[in-house]
Image 1 (tube, rainbow over the protein chains, first blue to last red):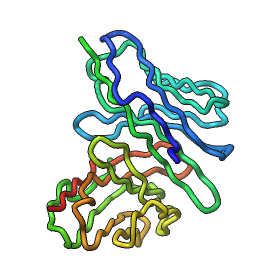
Image 2 (image 1 turned 45 degrees about the vertical axis):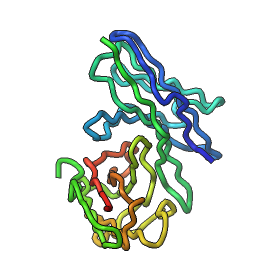
Image 3 (image 1 turned 30 degrees about the horizontal axis):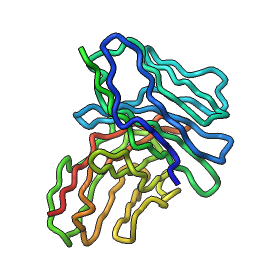
Image 4 (image 1 turned 180 degrees about the horizontal axis):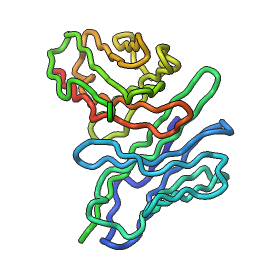
Amino acid sequence: AQKITQTQPGMFVQEKEAVTLDCTYDTSDQSYGLFWYKQPSSGEMIFLIYQGSYDEQNATEGRYSLNFQKARKSANLVISASQLGDSAMYFCAMRERGTSYDKVIFGPGTSLSVIP
Amino acid sequence: GAGVSQTPSNKVTEKGKYVELRCDPISGHTALYWYRQSLGQGPEFLIYFQGTGAADDSGLPNDRFFAVRPEGSVSTLKIQRTERGDSAVYLCASTGVGANVLTFGAGSRLTVL
């Protein structure tokens, strides 16, 4: 079963506008972490933001914020004031840890294109 | 080192050959992950090391894939009898004690002809 779902294979946004990239996840663990990574065409994986399952406040990092809705198991990324350099693939990821397992799994990604 | 280093950056091999991919994590990082990323897809988890031991190898696709980390630092991903379907970018990431953020290397692109 798909653990991380990103339903938007491709998104377009006008420069300087805000955009929301969707992510839903599936876990039976009580303690887990959620990430967003950016992958430009160069291929490097760039960390953007992290949210722990017990964190009460939504995480923010500069222009990035994570809209965490635990009951709905969603962790959407909001990018404010989009810039041309934001054009890239964006991956949502989840870390699960147990007595016999520890892994970080990634979703299929969303391709974001920022239009001048 | 300053970042996660992966070598080689590119490897072209023939079907059936043996391949080794190396990952040198950030100094002091105890946790190390290997992922495989096919074109247009998200990174696929392969194996996770905590120190020298493989804490979770549930993502290794079959027994042709094996990874070691003998001294708790550098790790080597070994692929035997390569197949064309093994062609992908192999990513390595590391993280420190108590940290959550994974720092990735630039990846090793494997092409099996």
